[in-house]
Image 1 (cartoon, rainbow, N blue to C red):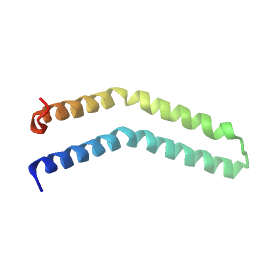
Image 2 (spheres, helix red, strand yellow):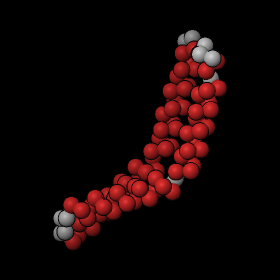
Image 3 (cartoon, rainbow, N blue to C red):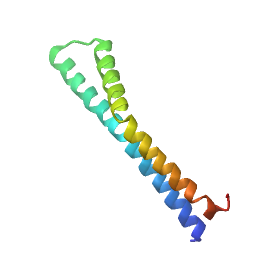
Length: 92
């Protein structure tokens, strides 16, 4: 493989890892709250749609707000790494 191909592959891997780190906690909380609500609905035979939607939405928004500052720091670091590698692609 060419050196440029290796750098592109590393950049793509770094992008995927950053994406998982950003979206993972929010999706995990949504999954956990969704399963908990589904178990509650199955145990109580309450089949109200808003009962499953509203708590999940509030939990996801809360986690997204709590993790906003670390997520922005992670995005800033990723952006700086990408900009530092621009010279190796002949774009600077």
